[in-house]
Image (cartoon, rainbow, N blue to C red; front, side):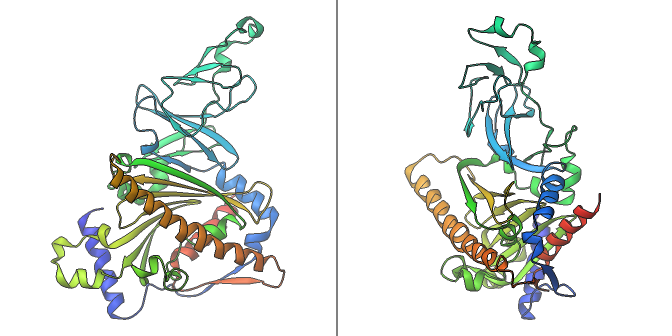
Length: 385
């Protein structure tokens, strides 16, 4: 992030801190609980938000070099991302053209050839069929060119890889990201190293889970024994970049940092968590420790009160000794406790309350701008067609 941007954010924080307030919107947003419960709305969201528009699938760091690949789940669509010999990223349906078996799992370097585990059909990095062991003559009426892996439109920009599973053309990712893409590019996300992925099912609507990433108001109370010891609930700052948002949650040491250092030495990364909310379902968190987290929330295809959450954890460099390994693994466990236990446990309780039939609405406060903007953006997207 450019130093002048950091200075601007610190100055805005300082003004709010001195005035004992935080950023405010003009009014409270009243949101019907039907937004989290209605199955017809949920089906529309899955169709419009998760099939026809760019969805972040991975960081460039997940496929860092030619021959590297990663298998991901984009909602109910299994996707295989591969970086080819020409350094371009390609996306395919992660399904063999024979009987539909998945041809890859997790991160890997397939040795330039993918082999289906079921009948050993093989494919190259471009998705083209290479071989059908013991049975080529059994499929001789099929044109081999028609048996390549099914492509999925994909694009790469600003250290991110996005797909549009329901479209025929690659997404214009740079255009979709707008100004937030230029800022993300400054973080050099492609230089990070993948460490670990965790996938959990949460008994709450996907938007309710995503809501927890959109405000820091709860830090002082829900997280008082964890991140609340080092981060401030207020002032918090959130800036909109189209339908995306960048939020900054400042450390408790920021007032002292600003008093005791010259403006030229103000360092946001060491004194705040910088959170990018990429519409509709992705969060990139850059906390003070120096690592990166990629969070993705996907709706359940059958139930409105359940979703799947993916967390991928990346380190700023190689983990090449036991001390570094222990440090980053401890960070993973800390993150797990804060978000997967504290945050998601709270959202599951809220979902049960909504399902009681007695609640009619929730309030999104004036002090929660990113939260209000997120729901406004969803409403706008659902009414555009």
